[in-house]
Length: 103
Image (cartoon, rainbow, N blue to C red; front, side):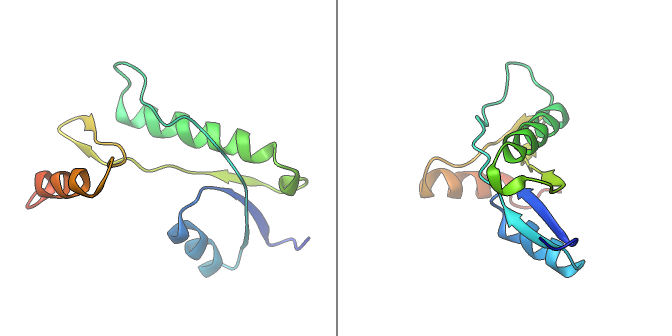
């Protein structure tokens, strides 16, 4: 394996592209993690917990042998509340409307 290879425990096409832009060769790793926030969990702690869990899960994949592994996660937060992944198209549209014209 190339010395520029890195295990990526994320399904994000954008993260893959960013790694390629800096000269790394991402090896996609399966990292199935429950992404449910814990009761009262702060958004920052939530994304750190998920990124670490994805990195651990990805490190366990056979393809990760000998590779550094990057785990990453992103959350959309509004008024201190984690919005999570939309359930369907209608839920996605409702989220976008809530976020419209906000910083």
